[in-house]
Every structure is written in C-alpha cells, then in structure tokens.
Image 1 (cartoon, one colour):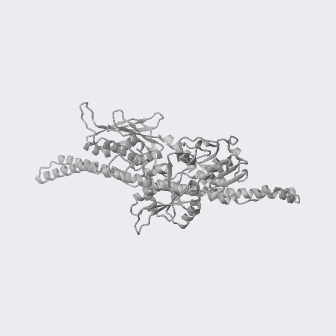
Image 2 (tube, helix red, strand yellow):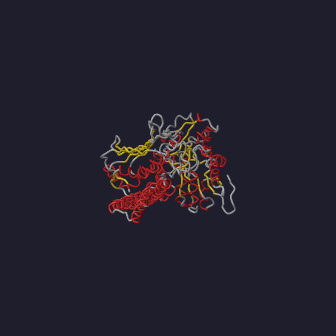
Length: 607
C-alpha cells in the first residue's frame, strides 16, 4: 500500500485499485501514480488500496475509499449499484485509433491445430479469470455468443481460476485446459517479464485494430476509468482530475502504469450494450425466466398438457403471452432509452454552460493582458477632448472667442468623445456575459473589429497589422463575439511571438502581422493570421491545442484550446502551419450559411 504523510485534520486521499494480477503487480503498476497524487496534495497525501472484485464492491459500499480505479465492466456495475461517477479515463499507449484499449485474447497451445476459430470451442474445456472479469471473461463471452457458442451450454467445461490471471496462462501451457481467456496485452506483459514463452501459444480468431499492438480476439472497449464516490467532495474530485490531466506523458508514473496520461471520460455506451446482450450487471433483471423459456426447456411436458386443450385456445393464449412479453421488453427498453437521452442532454447542457464560462474567462483574460494598450487607446481621445476644452476656456476668458472657431472646437470634442465611446462599446460587447447567438455574419467585419482592439499593442511593439481581406465573401452562420474572440486571440499571439524579433534590418524586413481572408478549395470561408516570429518546435506543435499547455511565461494555456473548441462547434477547423518567411500561420475555416443550415437540419432529429 502506497502512503504519504497527511495532517490530523485532512485524511489522505484513498484510491481503491483493482489488483487483477495480485497486490504485488498492482503496487508496481499503480503505486507511482498514487505517489504522484500525493506530491500534488502535500497537505493530505494519498493511499492505494489494492482490491479484488468483491473487495471493490465492499469498499465502495462502506465508503472506505474516495476514488476507484477499476476495469471497465466493474465500473459499470459500481455505477448502477452505488452511483459512482467516472471523472477521467486512462489513455493507454496501446490504445487503438478509436481510444479503445480493453479486449480479450483467447489462447491455446501452439500445437493444438484443431482449434482455430470461435466455433471450434464447442466441447472444449475453457478457463477464464472470474465471471465478473471484464476483459478476462465478459468481452470474450459476448464474442462467443456472436459466433453461436454459449459458454454455459456448449463447452465441455467452463472453469474460473480467480486472480491473479497468470493461472490461466499456466493452465493452458500445462495442458490442464484447452483454451484460456485473458485480458488483451496480459500475454505480452508476461512475456516481457520473462514468465512465459509467447511462442508456446496461439491466439484464436486474431483481429487487427489500427494502433493496437497486442494480440486480440474481440472488439476493443474504453480503458479503465477513475471514478469518484457519491460521498467524495466535488472540489476534491476536480483537483484530482486537474492534477492527472497535467501529468506529462513521459512521467515515471505513466511509464510504470503503461499509459500516456489521462483524458476526459469516454463513452461507455458500448459496455452497456454488451451487458444488455449478456443480461448481466445493471441488466441482470432481463434474466427473469419467461414462459417461453420454460416452454423451450420442458416442451415434452407441455406437449402432453396441450393435447387436452383445443388448438385454437392454445394458439390464442400463446400469441397473447408473446404480445405481453414483447410489450414489456419494449417498454423497459424505451424507459432506459428516455433516461439515457435525458442524462445525455443534461450532460451536454452542462458542458455547454462550462464552455460558455471558459469562453468568457478567456475574453476577460485577453483584455486583462491588453489593459495598458487599451488604456492608451482611450487616453488619446480623452487627451484631445481635454486640450480642446482648455482652448475654449482660454478664448472665452480672454473674450477673443470667435463663434466659428468655437463651433469647430466643440465639433472636434464631440468627434473625440464619439471615438472614445466606440472603443468602450467594443470592449463592453466583447466581455459581457451572453448566450451564444448564431446568425449570418460577415467574417471580414469580425476581423476588423478584433484587429481594432489590437492596434494599440501593435503600435507599442512597433509591429504593423496588415489586412488582406477578400471582397464579396459569402456569409457564415456563427456567433459574432466568439469569432471575434478567435481572431483577437490569434492576432494577440502573433504580436506576442514578434516581441523579440528585430525590425528594420538591412534587407528591409518590416515586422508585420498579416490577416488574410478568402475561400479554400472546398468553398468554405478561410482566415489566416501570419506572424514573422521564431516559429514553434515540433514538440510544441504536437501539444499546441492541449488544455493548460503554453509556451508563454505566465500563460494559462487555454487560449488556443478554447479557440479550437469554438471553431469546431461552428463546424470548422483550426490548425497551424509554418510561414514561408519565418514564423507561424494560424488558419481556420468556417462553413458558409447554406452548408451550416443544412448541417443543423441533419443533426436536429438526433437532439
């Protein structure tokens, strides 16, 4: 058990970990991760509690842990029984392109040539880990049923070895059983540890998944989730998630656990679909025996009784029963579907509200960084107003005021006041809290408005902002303020990137940020912001849009992540390329009005 010092008033963070290969393996794989959490919370520390499947259920029920790190299937059961909630999903370095990393491998001895596919399992002796082991049995169970093999009816014998999973491999190797069921990648892990020779085994019905380099016999499902209990404080859960998301991919804890980091919770609906087909976990109630099942198992006795009844009565009763059973199943399925849709709508609404808050905070942060430049912009018209007003006062005091001159001066004062009012109005519209409003808009107008807010910073830094805007661009369906936010952030980043770039060199180079608009090959509206800075490294480019990643000292690392979210929400795309003249070009595209409306109509029925 991993421990860290905690104060008397703040108990350590307790994390229950599924020890599917025993406590020693769990300590080796997960203790560094718990120690990492302990370092992030020096006032509390952290403890790892290795548990088997029954122990995991008991610990959650007794609330002796704050978080659980367990396999995908066990999480779904704990979610249904005790209301645990996933807050992050493990991102394995072996994950496939879809993000899935959990599957099953069915192994036989290499010399057993008579067993090739799933349909060859009938009449064989099969060993798995545990009836509740997700990758160690349940995924393979679903694959067998798809192939027409029921492991509880069609096998010669179905055995369960219990944890650790190594027992299954050794039983197959020694000939104690014909076939073994393993969680994918366990065989490779044992081979790396030198405990087995992989050449002694062969995988049944091998499948290939892009990006997944372990032997596999089934589909892949989402990786292990980290879930919090209903009793775990929300603030603590948020802090733990932030700490895990900030873990570098090359951190020793990640290497020990065999993963690259953590990501937002994945969609576990495929697991629910599997459990529903197997009638286990939250869907165990579907196993209730019906009259049809009894009829199929005891048809001889029913046939004797049916001979005493008229054919039409038997037929009518049977049809009526079938209708009731199917109606009940449809009602239950419809109830579950309605509940899942309601939960998904609530989750999407919560995500949208949080995104709005992040957008608003990002706009305030941008203006906070530009405060001195905006103050300088306001000081110019205010200074002019003061000078004009003093001139009027002196002329009036000296009695030399010419009415015509005074009219010109007051007109100039009004013009400067209107200029200051426009600056304040632009700032107010940019930072005020508001709901997203999609409407047809001219991208060029949004570009000009955003650039006007950056002119003060550009002049102070000796940089010229050049506009190259195409005429007659089609309208796009977008939220004006959000698009202005994207352009403002990209232009400000370009100006920041040129702070240390000298200007007026011998070759006549002028420090310039160029903002271009036009249409791409597919007819979408495209905007590009190009700087002449030092560019970015390949390492930075790979993480450029990751949350909390920044190359600026003191930066939050949210600007480009939020910009990409805004653009993709509008149906567009944001990416970075190298500038031929040095520096970086940030580009984004937006669909035109007709395409955006068409996409909205296609998505509307799915809600």
